[in-house]
Image (cartoon, rainbow, N blue to C red; front, side, top):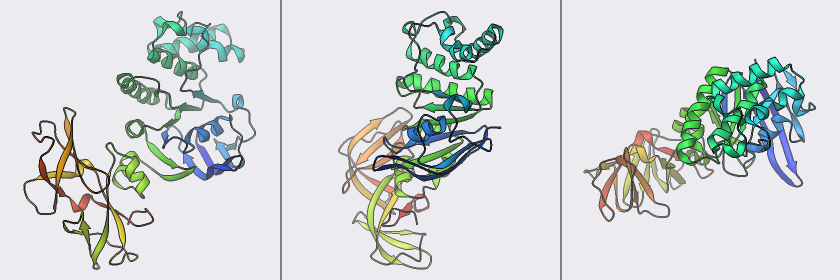
Length: 358
């Protein structure tokens, strides 16, 4: 078992309060992804779990034991860095065995662990090569293999795929997911790429400016964002946001201004909403439809078409940011066309002036 409990964690760099009273439970054998934009504090949290950063206040517990004052080597944690951190003068075997030699394990035990890890990662034929003779993906496998040989309670990954090309990132995502299933280990993974988060995580923790904005399963965050930030960060392309006003309110629904063209009825309401209030309507590109009818639709002109084979993204002119619509891969719509876009009221999210979902 390797449950991690973080309580009221704070970190300051001078006057900058970079981690602000964060509390988080990470279940044993889970794959938890910390995601957010650059500077949100995700790598700092990872480094505090590893013991590489001091904690100003709060506690980190592993298996019920507070580890605040333990050195990194005594926490039974392995960390995989973005830069691989391999010793260039050592062979792959010696890179993977280095930590085990420091622990003074027997040669037979070291051989067993290194060859077992190499087999899992399919790098047996690389053991006598040096890092300069390896591709980026192979180097990353070696870095992961070095972590596996230590048999840690917890694996920490700090943006390990960011230096790889797009095709290799997809391949390594699959391999890391398989590795998690094979090892049944607790893994915490840091990334700014929401696609990595959605495809790999059991639980996603979205961070913004040193605070947890929302946490939950990938599909829970996708379908039920609690605020404007999470709605815009999870999903690719991001959720469309339309600033508008409440035209009329009843006990069952609200009527809103839809881009100045017509009123639009939503079966959502709140006791805090009043006629005339400013709100933001959020809807994902895949929940908009190109329509022949003007019912519940908005008319706009296409200024960019992105064809991806399986689907097509249409960018329409609207006030401020573009409105993005996903349609069929074989769509015949072209730049300059004027189309009707139908809004599905059941798929709309409404955010108040404080950027919180209603």
